[in-house]
Image (tube, rainbow, N blue to C red; front, side, top):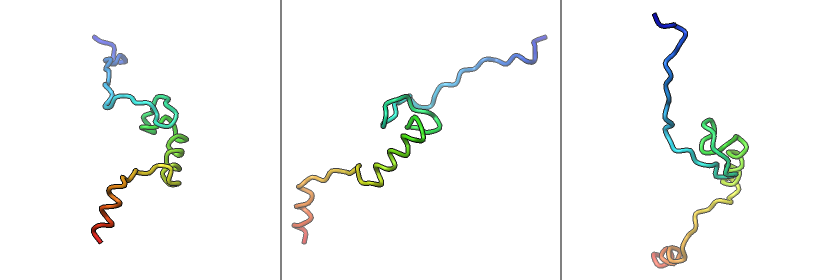
Length: 69
């Protein structure tokens, strides 16, 4: 009879490929994905709220808006 305390070994494949933290490039942690820590998550949030991240606008789009008026 098999020992009841032994459990079969199973490996679980990760759902996503590991990516480095976008702030400091260390390996990301599951709890803070895609960041490595709560600190890096807060740094990223601060950059968004302060306007450091912005979507660039082409000059052609600005001219097109003026022509519509």
